[in-house]
Length: 503
Image (cartoon, rainbow, N blue to C red; front, side, top):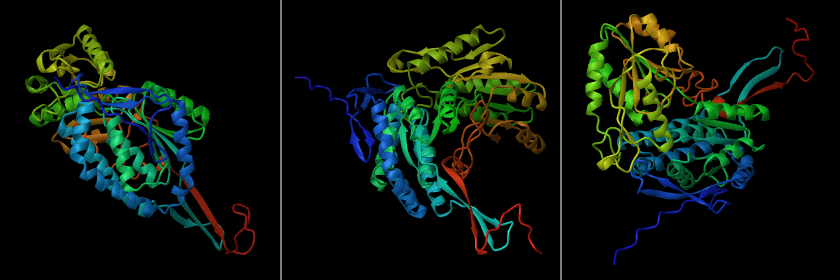
């Protein structure tokens, strides 16, 4: 007899310190994008009732957690970092299986969560306010941070553990309780993070997670007890969330799209620039908001650079990320596949652009059961083409020719986004001038547009977000509010701005 296939494991929501099924009683399949026959697990299809329960649990835990001394909160987060570190290998494989990125990149994703947690835990013994001199005598003036309340965290698929950690850990160290709506394509990585929180001893109700699609995300945004929404995802969805939060007077932090450019000047180390562009454009199959989707190249080195780039791109191995020899994994789902292929068609139909390599969906042999696209390069593109202006979010990049640094900067800034930028040059004057003039939240010199580190602020300008920054100490300004404190020990009423001070 043939042994029956093992049924996929069922996972649950985490509400009030308990792992519970959705009120709907329904589950959805989490499918490996590299192999549609591989069902990673069954996850609860949550609804508004689940969100309301999770918010109620967060509300019940809020006062106790807020009153827990910040250094003690930090100790629990340090425990969490240790648990993440000890389970890095398993969490990495789980991530590659559900999201598709190659093992080395998935390991970097988990490591970023580890780094973020260690780093942010240290803020539990700082969370600095400041003191200053008061206008009146015998009066003390200072300020301190206080938590905002219940935070709703809505996270995407492309960094299944790093981005949730960027939001969760600073929210916790500041004394907030949270409800996470996991990315529907990558729920297991969020579950792994929350299970680690449970193991670390974070009290019941402080961290809650609901899984599902649009309904729980919408319910979380609309719940009147949620004070803050932190969202990373598409610009269209972010705009809808911002409008709802404005109506409800909620705090909202948005991290959205990017159309990032690498400038390659005539004095650049061409081989280094090619390697950086290869990594920036095709790492995570181009599914990064910081992906190098535009390459702006000086005319004197344009032919040399594009020839070398295309040769390297053709050599990239595409396949299942669990294979350690693979360099480019699948894209996340059918919707992403359709969007990327439509943009490749747009590029082929735009007057002047040349499809230099790639452009096809891979469907044969090892690629038969996954969402695989050939890494794609368009040359002879112009700044105003749709493939040069709109976020594709896939393994596609465009090459644009320029004749000067001023023109390069003008082209780089000529999009609605402003997340990341880069320049390759050996001229320190050009490098510093570019970092001054490129209107982005992140700028690299002699490196790709990807590779942010957790102790620096992350975020962008223009359509990329709404001015907030994640990571670094700057993220504390999202998850805390300032309180000014005045202590008058004069023994009488003193009226600032009114009473005259005797000298």
